[in-house]
Image (cartoon, rainbow, N blue to C red):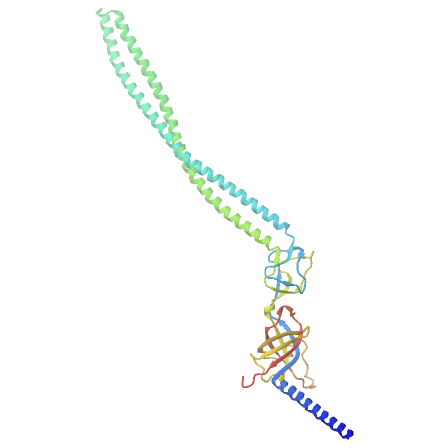
Length: 382
């Protein structure tokens, strides 16, 4: 009885094992029919960004990041010795300060001339007018004295004749002659004063002309100020240019990502535009799966994919097929197969399939990592 029971148990176990294996086989076959699976998977990117110092060169004094380090957009990556650029900035700043000081001096001179020239001109005109009036007054006085001289000359002649006729005393004739001589002396003094006033009037005229030339100095100063303002603008632009050049002695990251490659070390002397770092933007990372040509059925853009990265087997990644490339991976191989001798062995070709990563921690991925992909086939006509 126990012998029959043992045989029955063995038969049941054999049948159960066979059924289990059949279920596993059916599931495997169904899975292979529903999914295209490959372990020829590589992490790639099309946006490997190389960065270097723009328009400047020199000895590298600091490098903040190493290969594999994460970087933020705008974060400092490296710096070169900037003493030369500091001196250039200082020189430009000194030139600008001197130009501004000169411009301010000219503006103050213009203010002074604008206030002084009209006043000086008015004073000169007033002085000339006063002298003209004095000259006219002297001329009038000289004319009046001349009238007296003419009268006194007649009196002298008349008294002289009367004295000869013994009609008047000698004293009377002498008084008339003395009065005439006094008037003539007075006229000569007035004429001398008038001549002095006339000379002063000529000098005053020159002062008026000189005062008027002050207006020319005002216009000349205004032109100098305009040229000075243009010079200040040009020097300010040169200073900004020098500051921008100095700022370029520090290299900043243009993107948020990771350092893929470092091409230099502290102490190296580099020239623009030599690359210093190569950066990878995680947002541009994708996966390329190489599928055998006999697995392409149902694989087309839009097909969902499950991605397993060898380095992080417990990290789930999902994606979607973006493109099935039109050539095989061997088409552009550096050493293609030579079949010109007639020797040919059929080999299943692999077709690159580009897969965009839609979920998962992209910061963990590194370009070149490998893994495995399962692409769910899409039934129906493409």
